[in-house]
Length: 449
Image 1 (cartoon, one colour):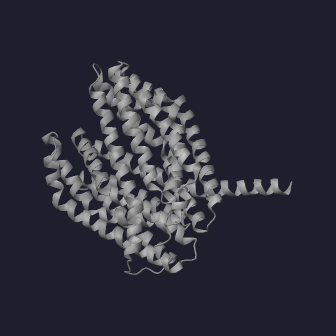
Image 2 (image 1 turned 30 degrees about the vertical axis):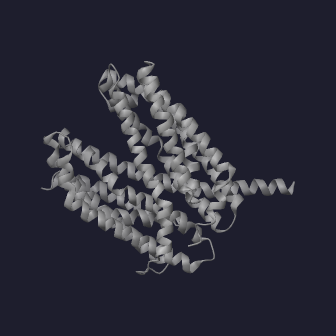
Image 3 (image 1 turned 180 degrees about the vertical axis):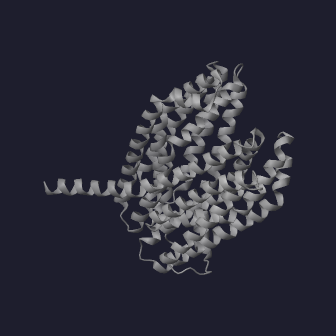
């Protein structure tokens, strides 16, 4: 009886710990989403050309910061482990090495962006009417790369050091400042549309300053960098960077397959675009629990509590799936209103509704896979995550989408079901990798820096 009570208490404790990390990350992801929606709205006030230029520049912005996102994954994996271990000297070196690596890399891309932004835009096959706007957007955004790299890195370190609420405060400030400056600079000063990009740069800089102030409470900051730690961070980081690129190429491949459809291909493309926007909103909690899981698993591995790390990763995944399931129900009950809000074209609305209904079936399965993948990232097993996602994407999703959608003539519905089938396989392979626990062996190497 006493054993059963202890087990129940342990499970409750794990659930509380998972939720304590999960809800602040969900809010942080929501703030990021809110900033993007405000940028799109304000850009639309200047006309379709500026809105299109903003969309293009932002996609290029994402490409520039992929390495920063990857570096934060590696930093969280290493620092979360060292934070709960007895290697305090190594922990301080890891924090400083991580910050210096992020700062130097971000500065490099800032210089690169300022110099080459106009040339990149001019080289693209896009309408001349948006090239000028896009070039201005990307050049200004380039000023903020170094701030964003450090902000992402410090957010990761704060999560790893169980200071997620500090990160939440910083990102709430970034959100409020960005939105206020969006409307103020863009709509009420001579800066015009440039104010959208300037608002982003200024808010990122302010967020970075707040995070660095918090970081001084974590450990003593110094210009000390250890090659062995940087090497370990990069070893863990690069698969995550490759994965981001592979995923974006996969999305582009789906667009190209849709383009081959014999009829209504433009409407289906618009429906797919709208569907991705809706999915990005649904998946805010999933991405939040993914990043939370990386920290939770990493912290427990640092304490050498391997079995508890496995359990908390699974429970966090269950929690995330529960939240996603609730969001799926909300979207399911309001799908027609949502599709109508995003488009006024009857055919696009109809195709959007079909896409959303089919994709909703696999959303909880995708959340399960994504959150378990976060646990593997926290253990430093980023290569497995990369291989599983890349293989199911390019050996299942893309070929099957072409076969069902084009060869068998099922059209858009065939493409959507191919995406669902690939998600099932991805979740299956991710689960096998996770619960076989082979990653626990390789995880021991992460703190040997």
